[in-house]
Length: 190
Ligand SMILES: Nc1ncnc2c1ncn2[C@@H]1O[C@H](COP(=O)(O)OP(=O)(O)O)[C@@H](O)[C@H]1O
Ligand SMILES: [Mg+2]
Image (cartoon, rainbow, N blue to C red):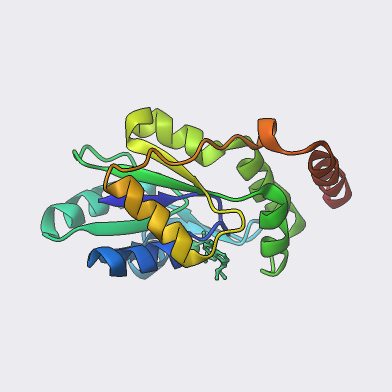
């Protein structure tokens, strides 16, 4: 099974669906699943998001994975600790400025916008994934400037052990003017 993880807006759902088709695997979009199965404890009006019942989600997901025979691709912004061998995590990354303009097209609140772009800048999901699953199981893809098809091909190379993915660290790699622009945007949105 493969988790396609990352900050909201990086392309998990789009890439995950395509990848599952390529692999002839089952596809599960975790936020959809949480809603469908009512695996939340409430709705946070301020952040306009469901508060996931992580304990129940973990239980449900574990039993689901026991049941499905075929491969499964799971798109998620939330990482669930599972004691299952063969779990791999591919974290999709996107230049924070590109993410910012993509998220501006969704009707996000200013807070949510800053929160997500900041999380991408810092690599929050990647670090969480490494903490949960260990660095060997976690790979990253820099999707900046790539279309969905190219991103899926990169996923395939990782799954077939022909690639170790990309090294992504925006704190190191953003150019001076990009960093300036990002910080100014943060300041203006707060
Ligand atoms: N390389 C890419 N990979 C994934 N999505 C992309 C890419 N380039 C552009 N997009 C677009 O960005 C959006 C990503 O949305 P989505 O897949 O819902 O992200 P997420 O599930 O991570 O929130 C889609 O509208 C998609 O068409
Ligand atoms: Mg999604």
